[in-house]
Length: 287
Image 1 (cartoon, rainbow, N blue to C red):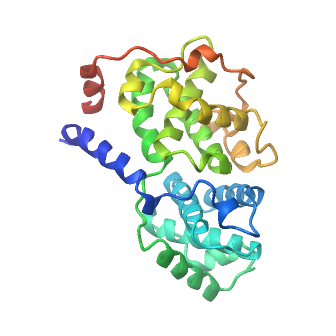
Image 2 (cartoon, one colour):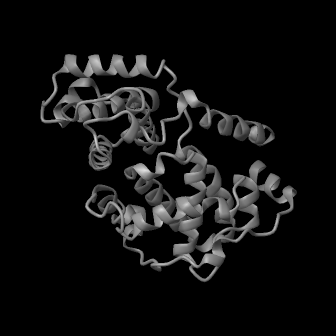
């Protein structure tokens, strides 16, 4: 039944992700913030990765937390002393939205070493909800990554779990970098698949016609985003931020953070592949 509607669902998600009400400004640090820097944002997100691990939150909670933070900062100038408060309050909202048994307000106060009181967290929670106009259900990179991974795994039967874990790692790295805010979540997810395939099989063109058809992106569309995430993977960007890297060194994630990668991606890989038979994609969607 779900396979019958998958194309309509995907089209709806693509429309929703581009809705200006659900999108952060691509340059909010420069245009809105006076006391918050890109480096501070990265440190906050890196710490929130640790919080999510500590409280065993589902990955969707982390992604939507970062989305709320970026959207709020696009609308409100914030003092740097309140940035961590914004982070835990955003995660509190995201936990209520995504988790079956979300942590309570006291848990989030505790994780900040009680830097903030319960009433401060609750007040910030209300301010976030008001700023976002209670529009909380925006799709994230993770939303699209699940879909794209299924198609990409068709070419990697022997390493499908590795591809999935590596994709999750690259996607979480993208959360750290302000440079990725300007890209739609679906583009980041597609770029993650491109790069994961390249890291696993560097001599094989990473962008198949099937993934191109299913994602809606050509290889040439992804170049800028792929190169940013590639730099993150090689620690040429955000190298001081270690929470995500340490997380994905664990055996439960196939130790993907330790996988070697070529320092350069051949320019020819960003040339567009041939179109695919649409019936193949429909078969994968409905399976």
